[in-house]
Length: 112
Length: 115
Image (cartoon, rainbow over all chains, first blue to last red; front, side, top):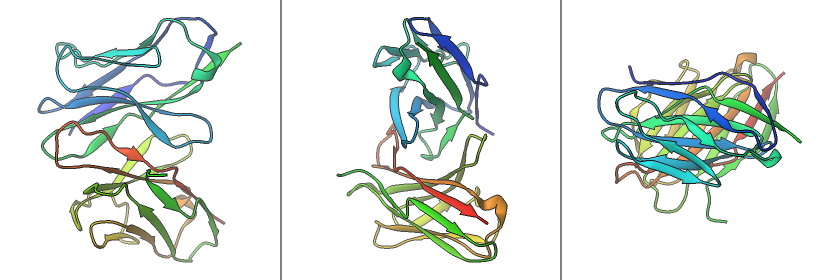
């Protein structure tokens, strides 16, 4: 079945470091792809999305590009901040049935 | 606000009791989803509603779990004869549902603790 695999955490970086969180998916069709973020003590919220191959989603300095050839949607940020500390979930959604599939989440710690 | 609302925010109950968790989706959203987030685990899909019907119940872990949605709005997730492994955060989400590539809007969740 369809699945989403993302790198396991926790990931610990110093402030201003460069971040990449890997995410790959398997799907029978062409899903939409999402990154969600869960800050400490808060609910999930959408960070960015991409709906077709080569689309780039971006928000709050984060970017992810939909790569069909490698079935990937890696999350990147050039310079992280302490406030980016959170759990990040990669997700895919087949348009045909609306069910969203999440990765297990990657906990990110940013040290000042 | 106009977001997804879940209640209660926290629930502590004894093993063997029944619990009901409520989700109030964003007005006009036809699709509603329940997930479970256990400690150290990712999100686990439980069930999804389109309107009042549930086309996909595949994620319900056992027959102790059931969910309903009435009037195309509020949904209730019921867990009967709770067990300690039911302890988790139960998340509800809604989306417009009618269009492709619609992300889901999540509530803050209900933290369920089974003693």
